[in-house]
Every structure is written in C-alpha cells, then in structure tokens.
Length: 363
Image 1: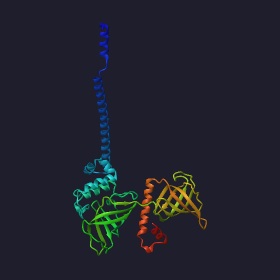
Image 2: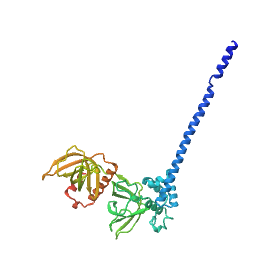
Image 3: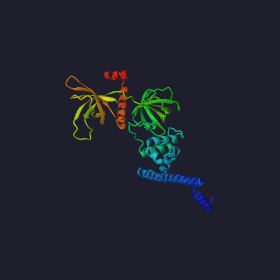
Image 4: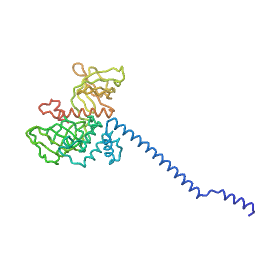
C-alpha cells in the first residue's frame, strides 16, 4: 500500500459513523422527548389543579360555605380519589361520598336533628346541612332516585303492603306515618322492611327498622336508609288514561307561523298517545306535539301519525307514536306516567272505572 493509499484509508476511517455514539445520541434524544412530555403533562395538571382550586373557592363563596364546610368536602372527596369540586357539584358523587362517610356511624332516633347537639357534633346533621346548602335537597322527579335519603315529605309509600306517607327525612333516617292500627310482622330494631313507592319509576327499598310507635294513634315508623333501592323501570308499553289537551304543529313551537291543530288527549304511554281531532290527520306525517296534562306542559315532542279514523259526530280518532324523544322529555313523561299509574293502582277496586279495570287486567 502506497503512502497515498494509507492516507486516504485513514481519512475514510476517521469519517465513518460510530454506531455506539449514534446509540447514545438516540437515547439522549429519547430521554429529552420523554422529559418534555412529562413536563408538559405536569404543567397541564398544575394548571388544571389551580383552575379547580379557584372554581372550588368561588363555589364556597357563592354558596356561603365556611372553611369548615370546604374541609368537609375535601375529606369526603379524598377516599373516592376525586376533586371536592366534583363532590360539591354532582349529586351522584355527593351521594357516594356521604354514604361512605356516614356508614361509619350508627344513627339513633336523635341523629340528624337539633336534639343531637347541632351540626358541629353530629355527622348526619352536618351532611344534611351540606345537602341543603349545595341544593341537592331538591331532586327533579324525572331523575332516578339514588338513595332513600332523597325522599321528600308527602311522598306516598307502602310498608310491607300497608299504605303510608313520608313525614320527615334527614341523613340518618326517615319517618313514615301509617294507619293507627296498622300491624307489621316485625318492628324490631335492625329487622328489614320492604318499602315500595313510585316516582320516575317503581322502587323497592329494603330498610332496617329503627323505631316504631305503638298502635293506637297515627303510627310513626322510623327507618334507616337504603343507599341502593331497586329501580324497576317503567315499561314503555304501560299506557294510562289521560284527560288533557294536545296541539300539533308542523314545526317546533319556537318557529312562528306554523299551522296548529288542537285536540283532546285520551291516553298516553312512553311510546305514544291517542287523541281526538276535529279534522283528519295525515297518516305518515311527522308533527311536533305539545301536551297539557295533569297540570304540566310537555312541548315539542317529535311524533309520527300511525293511523287516523273517522268517529261518529264528525271527529277523528288518531294514534301517534313518539320518535327520537330527548332524555329530558322521556324522563319527564316517564315520571308523570308512573305517578298517574300509581294513583290509579291505589284506588279501591270498586272505585275504578270499567276502562281502568280493563287496563289493569290486561297489564
């Protein structure tokens, strides 16, 4: 090899890449990228945390909650691994957190009331005050009930088949007033009673007896809460007789100028309704329906006309099917139908009309 060849060979080797150096370089670049990603996530989490803290502080100020209330919400949220803001603004999280907290305490007949020594001494009273301050004591009737702590005074219930009415509710217990001489198989403290009621659907709760006043006057029955009552969904095929007004329009009510047809409501279910109309309705058309029934107004329900038949006297009988109901619309209708069905079922058999008896027999 000539000196020139040796020189050229040494230059070539000098500029050849070192695979070991490239590996180190790639490792350093990868570590830098991972570090940047982790740092970016940390900064995002920090910003989100600060925003959450600010929103939580604003909520405390708006609701006039004390620092002790704020600490209580922080303690409630910690076991669930969620933010206190989530517990303070979402009913389902509030129920889960408070049920977990109160499960560690045994209620007495004085729990949750002024007789217990005030909210500072009684965890049931503290949670009760938090519920009212946060606005969770008023739950819309079309929303599913998560716990019997959401019952309200005046609600009709049945205790092992005996009719009663809710008198008082707090976080520790609820009171049902029954007939003076109502008798029960067992009223021993701790024994379970089957309690049923209708709200947005039919519910079955199994609640432990806490106390029962003796027969002879309006019986006050005190029960511990059921945190997970069984919800029996109202079937879409349940149809109830209804006396109300129906108005059909080709467009939603907020669009002016749409022609309207008014009629009378005959019956209703989650699937549709029957009505009388002064004019023939076009079968296959898709109107919007507004219903005034039982003191409530249900507007802009999308429907489809299944059939329309002439009746004696010049009127028409039409059957409509609901289509693409929104969750809120379906929830409100379900609750109204369930309440109406419960009222009909509470009537003595002799007081029911032939139509009602026929509906019950065919259900």
